Image (cartoon, rainbow, N blue to C red; front, side, top):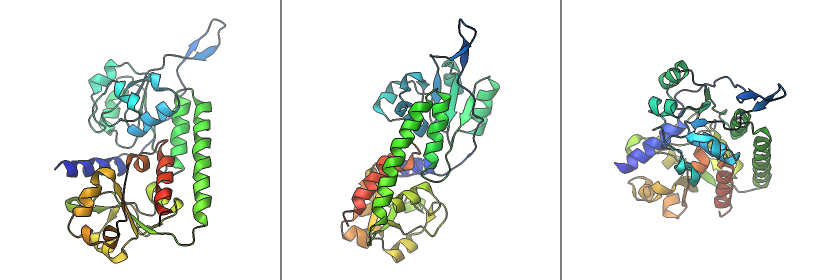
Length: 290
């Protein structure tokens, strides 16, 4: 049962429910002694998504974060920030009590919660990057603008982009790319992977693999197709690796028999945040072991 909850939680974070973006507004300003304006130093921010929390800390603005969801578990310092509940059921009362200047959400913030927060006079913003790796750059820049950290955002994007291009150019020269399957979910809940039109699917390809699910759209797959295509390598979340290897049907796959099932930290390839580049580098290292 615990394992099913892990898979369900992971799928919830991946599969879009409410994809929309709120209008970007300027960082709150105050009038200085000369009559000009300056950014408010004590900006108070509530994050309603793990990737947003990671971006905030990566921009060096962790001190501005006064509230987060239960799923916001990285970096470790995030645990010191007050929690407002889950992504799907954050506490409106807890959020209001924190008196935030800005509330930043991503894919799964419920519309009714957002409407209630907005009706309370709070500034709610939704950022969900396009379904491609580069979409994370847009999210970083938007959050950077919200926090008055445009320079930090550009520096972070430049670092990620440079590392991304290095991996892309390296993998372009591979002559024998391994076929790969990413097992997001499996078993009773069905088979789920990253199709060719997903940012994770793109990451598998850029890292030097041949995604066997590149010909599908979205995330739903089938055991029959998996057995038919017999990938050289299977990627699965570290917490689910042993379960996958020992499960009926999956245990008979050639990749399992050959010891080519690799467990990874799925947060580094599922959260559209700064650690996506670490995910690509991790995948590239695995694929080069072929």
